[in-house]
Length: 92
Image (cartoon, rainbow, N blue to C red; front, side, top):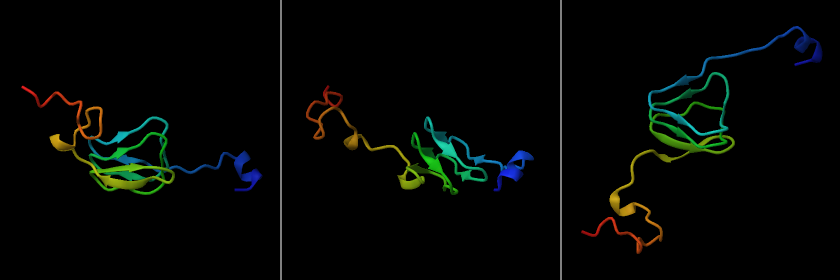
């Protein structure tokens, strides 16, 4: 936009649509007109420039889908050491 146009307060905007239970990390930037699907998580500092589908984890600049969102199974749970050697939640 040329400088003269900026002086006349020419701006544009579009609504951002967020689905239910969507999470946005701190410092993330969501551009105008983007739709974020339900149950989607956006990582901190990400820049969302396109629509994101429901139920995904998305991060980066530009923001991209990394994987489907969901809970890890108990066998994948992190307990300190990668092999789970320090886990005591399974012991009786």
